[in-house]
Image (cartoon, rainbow, N blue to C red; front, side):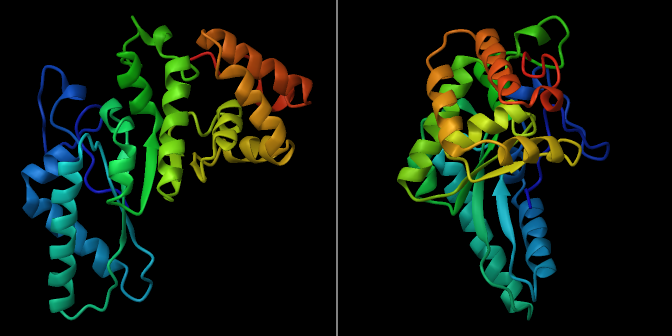
Length: 254
């Protein structure tokens, strides 16, 4: 379960946040650390709901530095003690962080030493890396999921996380794109999150190729300098492998 993740394009009518630049403003973990009373209530509720199951995993959104993780962990430990004192028999849950801010890409090892798992929010990470608001029609065509900078950042994240022995997942549109899923599998990501409509397509493609084939494809495209060329190459290679009807036309250009 993700802790309260509002701000940017995620609005609550009963918790209005009005800012000139909301994507660079008060959102995600910044809101809840400024309001620890909200954070504690939510975490205690999560723990109580997990009683008897003990399968809770808590994910912290919009982490940009290790101090935020340290503060959040302190509050989570406090919430656990308070929940035990209320008579609930719950184990301390696993805690993970969302990698959505470019600064976090360069702190993966430090973050991984503090948490149990990491999850990449590919939509926001791509948006921040490219300085492109994908909801703005004037620049939406500059949003490229297969931009070389994005792919290299994704590869760095998983390599650094694996060096610390921590699992990494991806949520966002890239994971639900069959071409993106192939690259993410080749990079070494453990889990892909997607909506139900994309699941059959991704499953069909991943079951129809070998890990070795995907890794060779990744090795070829990771050195390319253009997002359009990378997307076109991916589409061509998957069409040659017999997946043309599954991936459809131009699915990875933006």
